[in-house]
Image (cartoon, rainbow, N blue to C red):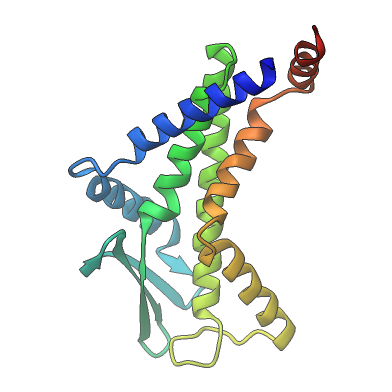
Length: 199
């Protein structure tokens, strides 16, 4: 009974916190996308020796897709562009992690430490996602491509790109996994089980 009540209260708090943090507050998406583009531009302005990357505001933004990623082959100046949604790629998994961590019934010192570690983990995922996006974009035989991987390596890259960058559930799964890894200790589960079995 204790465990069921604890889980129900936890889920309710997570839902309230997530809705409050992810709500479309005026100017929030625009501000986050600006910060995201600056950080991404600093980290990924170049891709290898001959590739350049630009993260720019979309000319005609469609919902959360308010950023344009432009990749360019410096050897021939050929380029390609695709829309990108920083809100979905970075902000939503961040607030999911924050909601889960803040709602966890642990001392605040541990929650804050877990939140800091979790934010690092989520942003490492965001960096990996962008790396895969660029690696996928520059691979192939089009004019803007920098290389053409062998068949099986291309298949592996495409599979990783689909799973990590395209699947809409992956950012939330990453947030949940990061929360679980950085928040709980083995002793926490032992105490929960003991309290659940205690009459």
